[in-house]
Amino acid sequence: MMPGMNLAAHALTAESPTCLGFRGGVEHHAAQWQGQPVFMKILSSGDPEQQERFSHEGQINGRLAHPLLVPLLERGSHTLTFPFVQGCTLREIIEDGPVAPFQAVQVLDGLLQVLVYLHAQGVTHHDLKPENVMFADNRLETCAVRLIDLGMAHDRQASSDTHAGTRMGTPHFMAPEQFQGVRGDPRSDIYALGVLFWDALAGTPPYADPLGWLLGSRSVRGPLPLPVALQPLLERCLHRDPADRFQSAEDLLRALRSVRL
Ligand SMILES: Nc1ncnc2c1ncn2[C@@H]1O[C@H](COP(=O)(O)OP(=O)(O)OP(=O)(O)O)[C@@H](O)[C@H]1O
Ligand SMILES: [Mg+2]
Image (tube, rainbow, N blue to C red; front, side):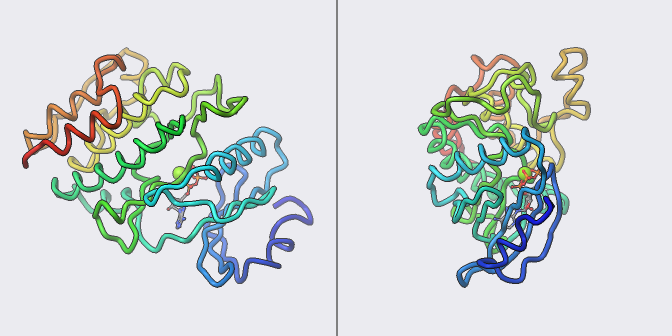
């Protein structure tokens, strides 16, 4: 925490904060704020790059509103306050084993609804992974999906791109072109969703060695998960060339809804 900063000031409005963790110069807290439980990110780093990223996340989140995207309640220079999602992440679910196909389809449907919205707003998420998907009340249903973490998002409307030129993201979920530094292509999010869907159905992502695949040196992929009816859709999300994938979240959502399990 920056000397003399944050918690003292924030304690005026947020009650009984409990530190949940610390990540990249940002503390995560659970607290009460205006009578509701909140999840707070508190910038505790003085590093200009981390400050810029923090401000970028607040800026993007602040102008977006979708029922399946966790909204930003308040934005301060060193604080971002969100409603606390009482529920688990998709990562926690997958740790207990593969997700039943009908539930995985419901989750993907919800995520695609948010993506259609984000892409129409000129925003690409660029960090779609099970850790960034939560479920209100632990319900694996479309309407309970809550997408979080716009920390790596690209906003076409923003004058500068804080992440330009940096290779960021989680290798398993990163599209090859994103790994090469291409930013703002919605089809990179389609790739990440394909990996996420695979991970949910199989309990493990497609490549044991994602860096090998990204670098083009090795590409041993695990067997396509069942059911067979979903396999063409998975394949199409995961092409190396974005031109071979579904071209939009709408297209993928349409294809998903036409699958009969
Ligand atoms: N609104 C929320 N309510 C409850 N828990 C949350 C909320 N937002 C995030 N979390 C929890 O905190 C974790 C980290 O949040 P988030 O992904 O937004 O932060 P991050 O700084 O980008 O961290 P990371 O680098 O791990 O992705 C999430 O995986 C989730 O478990
Ligand atoms: Mg995250």
